[in-house]
Length: 108
Length: 112
Image (tube, each protein chain N blue to C red):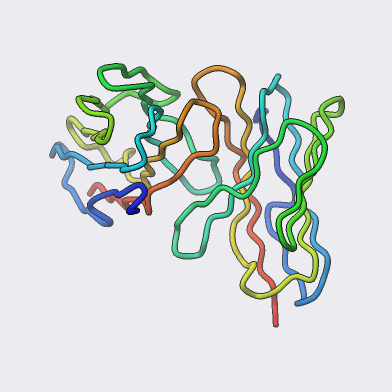
């Protein structure tokens, strides 16, 4: 079983829809990260959080430490949000564990 | 700022050949790492470095070597390429381990 599981694996949405991507982990963490991988392949960090909730524009990330679960929400989705969204956890050691990613396609 | 620069972007090798993937960052980051990305799997750590002169193995180090002679550069060497090393390789850096990482654009490597 993977230590970081994401769901769904693939998601198609209509422009304007509210989107939720889920991440569950089974290890102790010092922080959780959400990243975005563009269709061209580049990877950027969106959020790092260890508790509560963070918001940046139309993106909201939440984490529940007790339940070992995080969600990434996108409000008013747009075709430019189409990308792979990756959840990753820092374990306090020298490595980060990555989920396999959720591929999002937003239709105009 | 250039951020993290990886070269080359694409490479095709024959089995048994060796090559070096270059990675440089201009942000004075202490932590640098190399990952490989394979279909259906998360990024997997190959090697990492917490500062100049200090490197260590990650999750999948076999067949790869690294060195860190300067803060800026962290090259990854494939010693004798094998088809199983066909993958997309990413270099990343951050101020310290566990902090948000800055990624290079990736190298798509095919081994025939």
